[in-house]
Length: 319
Image (cartoon, rainbow, N blue to C red; front, side, top):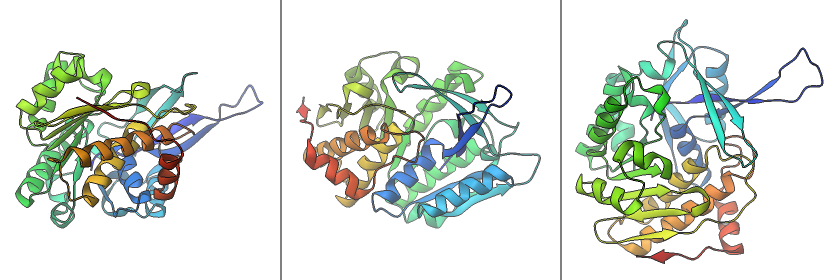
């Protein structure tokens, strides 16, 4: 649940009076839904898009991937689907420039737009912090988290912090902290730790969140792999070496593979073997997602993930 955007990349042209672009579907929670679907797990997306060219494009893309879009609301003009222009650097890292109407289509989702049956029938409910920035989608997101709690469905909160989208850093920290209190799983990237939790140390960050009542903390660390922690155990998984082309969507592939494995394994967050294998599979899926352009194009299928894992699995270090 949350934002879905058209990621816009530079195309190629030999003309000095043309600047071509290629649009690819993106947005962290939508990427997670597609990644889960490709791994063989039924997935649904709840959010808002405009009645415009990009909204049509995104819905076609999600439907083509087998994602249930019955929870997507189409917003009337002049509200538009959000665009994110993506600049890729030589090391595969990227920078986003967002173009959004005020309000944007994804910001207008209301509490009554959240389908109760989709929430109650899920293995996990997943969203990030971007829909927590503005109303009414902020209230809709907290409503979804509370519905999940009432139904006994774990919330997976992928922070996905974009500081430049928030007007007040302190409001951002308070809002993320409030949502963490409703989440079973909190996933962050390494560079989100200090601005949100005041530390760059994974162990310290995990202790803070576990003290908030979170059942599992995940920290994706790019080329350094991933860290996981529960109240009973913690450990690290090294990265799978690949040639990085575009890291867009890697964290979403990581989270989706973790959630799919846990869902298939009965969401057993108390068993280290289950969690460790979920994080190992997440690291592999994240690596594969870096091998091509776009957030969704290189998300692995179940067969591709299994083949990659069997070709050279990374070892895991507990403790």
